[in-house]
Image (tube, rainbow, N blue to C red; front, side):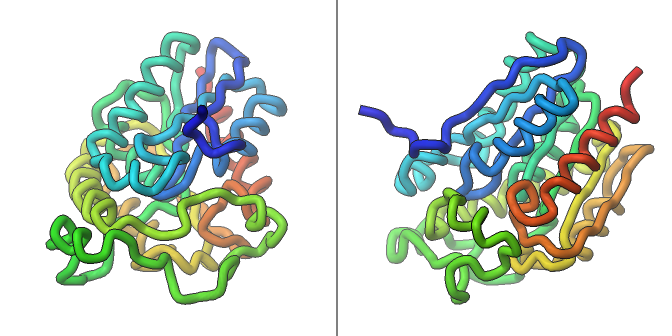
Length: 259
């Protein structure tokens, strides 16, 4: 008996002992949304790449309800220690909530750089966010949006192959809110070089792409911080139509920091 969703497993692509890239998927997502990026960075650029699975993800939604934001941070920290044992310098690359986790841990871990993609800065004002624990007992899940499936994706073939939980666990939304507060406190402490990548056509960021990007940028303590705003992609930058641009921008950023 297996528990992981097929094709959504974590991955490890060995490459250079100098550069390791830890790839972190998003809220309700799976390592699969980072696999193409890992394959590209490994095959084309020779980096060692590890794609972690966050606790409660890539199995069944009930597992996510039982997990907490501290479990997600621990999943990434586990990955960092595994990768740092195989490479001299570790970069963090996270999508959406994966970017939140990367930026939060960048304040604590001796990393070489961060790439945060489609990363939210905050959730919208909603009284329910302060009561998700008991509200989840009444309604465990909420729809992600009211739009037809695939809305917001520019590469429809990639969307059809995408794997994520179909609904948002209500209690987990509350955990994400807590994690965002932790990130806010961590941002001024981040000193590692940071690249922020967003799409202006992202329909899923609560505050919008430019607001989220500029808010994170303004609070980052990094001396070197860069912004890249794309068009023609949805929220899942690592799988949608502009993915090759994202992969190349990430590789260029890492190459520019090699000593």
